[in-house]
Image (tube, rainbow, N blue to C red; front, side, top):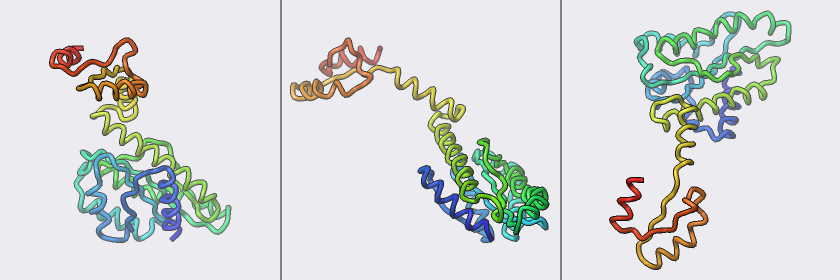
Length: 226
C-alpha cells in the first residue's frame, strides 16, 4: 500500500538529518516483533501502516496481535523506547478524505495502544500522526515527520550521554560544565615544551595566566588538587 512509499520517503529524510536508521522491517513478517524486542535502549520505533475506514491493514493487525499475545504488560518499559507512529489513508478525493479521516485515525490507534501496553511510549516531540496519501502533500508530511523523529533521536542520545538525567537538559548542562573547566598544560622534555608552546594558542579553555609546566610528580599532584 501507500505506507511503503511513505516509509521510503521518511527513511530518505531521516538520512538527510544524519539519523541512524538501523533497519527497515515489514510488519507482515513474523520477525518484526523480534526486531522490536531487540531494539537498543532509548531507540525510536518508527511504525507506518496503511488503514482504511474499515480498519487497519493486515500487516498492522498482525503486529498488534503478536505484541498483545507475546509481550507482557510493560515488558519493554526498561528499554525506554519511543514510538513514532503514522497512519496512512488513501482517498480518491477531498470529500472522501474528510469523511473517512476520523475512522482511519481511530482504526490506527490500535498500534500505539499495543506499544503503550508493552511499555513503549509515544514520541514526545510533536509530529504528524495521520497522512492521506490521496490528497495530502506526502513529501511535506514525510519531511515533518522525519524531522521530529530525528530531533527525538538526538534528545535520546543526549540522555544516554547525560548518565540518566533529563535527556536534553542533562546534555546541555554537562556540556556547559565541560566548557567552564580550564586546561592545564604539562610537558616532558625540551622538544615537547617547544611543541606545546606552539600548540597552546589552539586550546580555547587554556588558563591565560598560566604557563606550561614540566610534568613532575609535584606539579601533577598540585593540578589534581586544583
